[in-house]
Amino acid sequence: MPTALITGGATGIGRATVKLLPARGYQVAVTGQNPDSLARAGSELPSDDVLVVRSGGACSPTPTYKRGVPESGRDARRSKNPFERLGASQEVAEAAAFLAFNAAGYITSQDTTADGGYGLSV
Image (cartoon, rainbow, N blue to C red; front, side, top):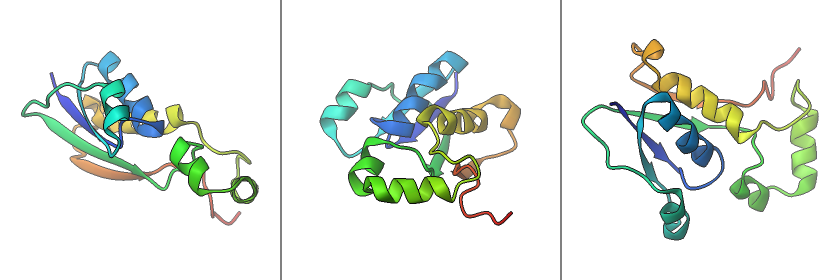
């Protein structure tokens, strides 16, 4: 059984990924900064088959994002997004889950930017 290491896996996008991957046959190792949140998230020790995926640049209303970006900033971000909304943690987790799946076996590591097309000129 392969193992996925989820950094920041105690909350938000990371937590959604931690919940999703076991259903797809992965053991999950979780890292994060808040020991209490990590204890709640739970994790399994990694095996020798580990893939690391970092989801960066996501426009998702995670607790960290909400603390750091005021509502006016979130509104501005929504207005510049082709979908006119922020992404859900589950949507970003799906991208990470794909990269951890055997169908993406040739991809050894990836830094995904799941931002709904934020900043694209149309």
